[in-house]
Image 1: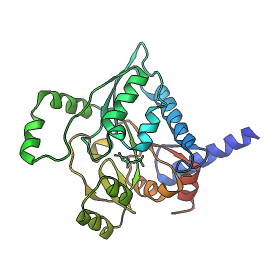
Image 2: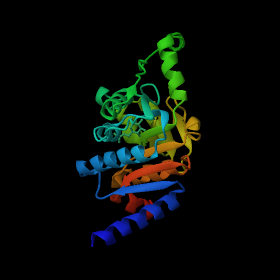
Image 3: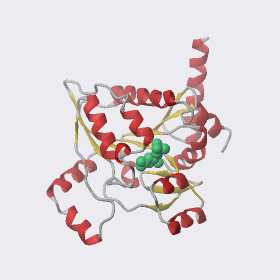
Image 4: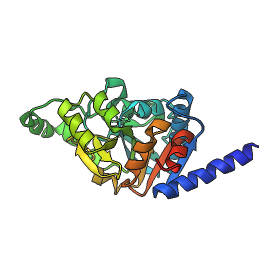
Length: 258
Ligand code: BG6
């Protein structure tokens, strides 16, 4: 029956959260790498989690990019209330994605759909360090960076290392280095090995991995059988307060011990 199925899913969610050592897992039916409707379920779960968890007052929500995040954004609904106001910002400067899945775009879509506000961070990808330093002195950029540092919520995807390196057109020598260090996972511009150790970082302004440790509401959104290994690796050192929103395909694979 449906009740039995729900009960079973809840059991697996508890089991997976315990196995990964994080606060909570939510599992959608199916395999998100095969069925787009599973990614929409992630979006509904994120929306509901934000609606129930975000406290009253001002919230600063830092988001990352990626195809999962872009699809999740489309499911966000009204999150503003009389007492609660949300400002969406990109978590870090651009790390090489097409416009529609950039953090700036995801943040704007989420803000518009939830009736909140957003601020964009415009930092070109390729800059000399001189230009970079100058840009950081710009008041409009400083203002957004200050806001990013006040984030009390972060929402991000998790990717497979080499897949992300190729998508971001990283150089051959960088890809070789990732291979030599057995990179398996990537999240917000950091690359991790199977033990969840950082082996490479794309230097960008904005939130750094260590900052996320102290942020109360952290959501990681990733699913699909092929991402199981990446999710597992990333979670080894993920902040304990992380909520993972994933699917059955990834959950079953992780629990099998990939
Ligand atoms: C990137 C995020 O934009 O998307 C990463 O910075 C994540 O955190 C990646 O690894 C995942 O992408 P996708 O398209 O698989 O959701």
